[in-house]
Image (cartoon, rainbow, N blue to C red; front, side):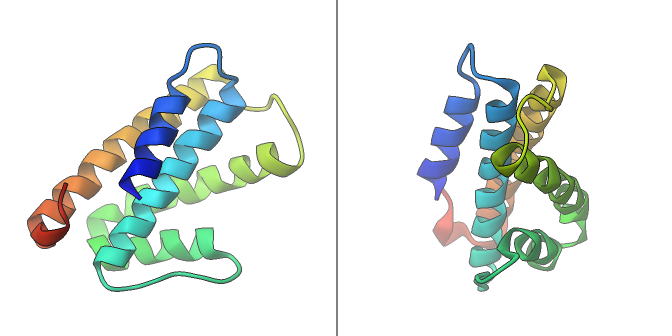
Amino acid sequence: MRALVARNLKDAALAGLSADNKFGLAYEAALILAKMAVACAGYRVKGSAHHRTTFEALPLAMGRAAQANADRFEQCKRSRNLISYDVAGIITASQAATVYAEATAFEQAVEVWIAALHPALRK
C-alpha cells in the first residue's frame, strides 16, 4: 500500500499534469492511507460505498483527531467522482495543490500514528 501511495503522490507532482488528474491521484493516495490505518486497527472495508465507509471508519481507527481528515477527504470524494465519470476541467490548480498538500500531510500523520501504535507495521 505504501508503494501505491508513493506512486500516486509522485505522479501527482509531475509537471504538466492536469489539475483534475493531480487532484484524483492525491485523493487516491489519501484513500489508500485511510485504508492502511483502518487495516492497522484490525478492520477491512469492502463492498459498495467503500470509499465513504473507509472515511467513516478512519476516526474509529485513528481516533477523533482523524475526523477532520475523514471529513475533508469525504468532500473530495464527490469532486473525484465527477472528474472520473462525468466532467473534465472543473478542478482548479489551487484546489489540486491543496488536496496534494493535504494528502502529503495525511501520509505523515498516518505514518506517525502507525509508528506509535503499531510499531511492527512501521516503515
